[in-house]
Image (cartoon, rainbow, N blue to C red):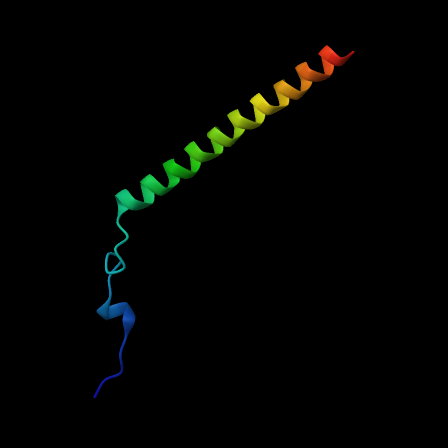
Length: 55
């Protein structure tokens, strides 16, 4: 009896990961990073304007 060889018995799509899943994951990470950047920019502007008003 031969041993189990996962390289022969499994392919790249057996885990449910396809090219579209990888592409959507990368685009999603990019979109989330842009969203956090915009939120950070708005918070920084708020505090900057708040400090100018206090002076």
